[in-house]
Length: 535
Image (cartoon, one colour):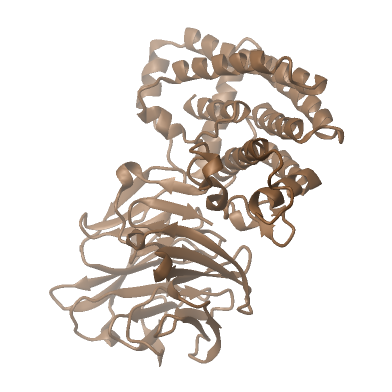
């Protein structure tokens, strides 16, 4: 039931201008019970109705009333379920666990709704009909070209919330309806003009109705927050790059990617939460960003030498520690099939060795033995990646070579780069190796055979921290640091190396972020203080 309450908390929060995190785990771990939180959400919805009665246009008022009735019936279904439970049911709820992951979350939601339907005395069916009526009324209001911008925003909220609640048992159906609604909303001239006036200080409109405009911008960002979290939680990794954008007079605004551009403005106060594409680990767990990778589910896999293994940080929250035989992990990478390649340093032999773990339960599938071509050596920093042919690409500190190996760790060939330092590098769709130049002012792009195909020169004062290829959008993303601004940036380039957009990522050099991607289209930037941003 937690998963349904989390959705109610998030969607009702949107209607009362409070963007809330859609994480059922936070409810499980918190001091407030599922039933009590549901009660608070419903009270909040009814209290808000009193404030809106005199303000709403007819269709909006009817839609809100139907939505409110639907939520009342849904809550009644939960109450009936609780009354009909046997003690065995209760005990089972306390001990059962649902594995982390996108598909498991959708499965949990489907099972909860199926159970409710069976035991709710038709309350769920009535609730669904009320949500359907709310959606139809909201659609009529949304399509009304005579609505002022404030009512247009509220109509969009009602339509999206109604779609989500109408299809609680089938999130994919809700998402199919919601994303096009958001796209149409963003494409309306009123929204485009509003964001242009808010973001471009030179606009002649900027002084008119500043406070009202800020509130409308805030509401629009909250819609994006709630819907992006819902989509990310129930449909798998979703790229912020492909999220519906807003056209300004001279550029395109990405509500998710450019979140900080709005949220840090004084007029927003603290109303906008952290970016919707960000995951904060429990207790801000520290991450060694040198050794990390990403799988197709957007789960981040990191080395935990202090714990003697690797840790899987699930995109939907939670984690799993996998113990390994050695603590000296020197590099790791994930291939397109989610198998994890781990390079370890054997202290006794003073050599590197390769292990491969399967991507389901992370058990060793094979021990590839020593990487003899690296010789006997002390442990050193190393970065590895797996290309689309399943070859392993390796570089290590104080070594100018790039090593290309078979997936069993046998050296095939090597070539020289222009640096002896270890750099985080990326692999393009064409299996090109994208790596920082020695002076960190450019990204050199080599063929797998070692031919320098092209170079991406960075803007002045930018230094390369990492580079990744976004397989979903075919963009080269360079993570940079600018010392005189003490800030990190994301530079988005075409495959040809042309700079398209430059986005502030975060301030403070001590964040030590690192970027990683997967051929499935997942991309993440990981900070050592336990914050993960998915792009």
